[in-house]
Image 1 (spheres, one colour):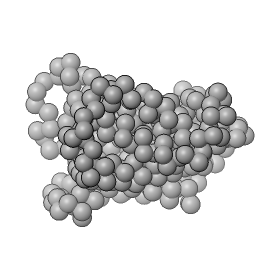
Image 2 (cartoon, rainbow, N blue to C red):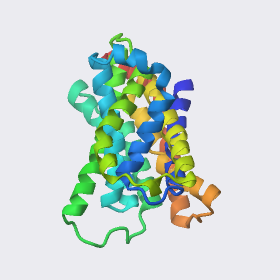
Image 3 (cartoon, helix red, strand yellow):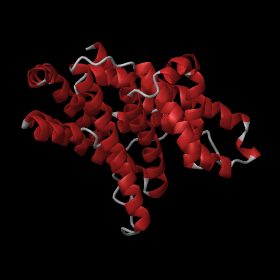
Image 4 (tube, rainbow, N blue to C red):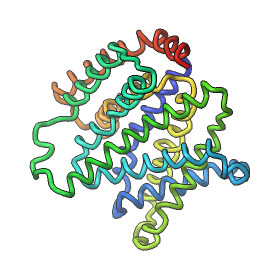
Length: 293
């Protein structure tokens, strides 16, 4: 149960992203990601020497690049399509372990499909206003669609990879994977930052919000995500992660005074019911996975 709480903590910290981004002005989305990676790399400075020594290991490189790609794809998707649509698509990550179990283990778990449908329906109720997109499906929209779905797939694949490696007895050094996520992400996003940089970015408000965004919304959830992925089955971990947009809405209500409509409250209740179903069947899931492994 302790690791499921980590899954909730991961969702909770990721849900703070929007609050801190509201405090950053005059900086493009990809450069905000650069700031997240930059400050998180500083927070990981004590692991850098050990990371450099282990940088060639496959168990470090691939998961790290996956999470770097997740942050980049998810952030860029918000620049191309409405936030509600992007958030909904990114939250579809539990579909990845469902498909994986069907393809790899020839296992169809009805309770997973039902709970996924309930949570997905609740999130749709919560986010969808009916007028989120009215500009047609052009190239711009398709790019955002691909980026959002890619981030969902990446997050699901990361959980499966860590879970499977751990089940096979591989030594998973989460601190090095997390450090790699930030370092590789920093390298990938630096070229754009070099071109886009201007002194007006370096305001006290921007830097304060960026540090909080990096530590609270990036460093902490990334660490919890790796730990939870090792101990919690991929579906359960990703299903709990679907609560992120709901938690973000609740935080916006509490911290920013944004009101919640009846439709949004109904969506919250449906999501909570779906999560209760996930957690109620969790022991059976873990047992089934252990037998399959």
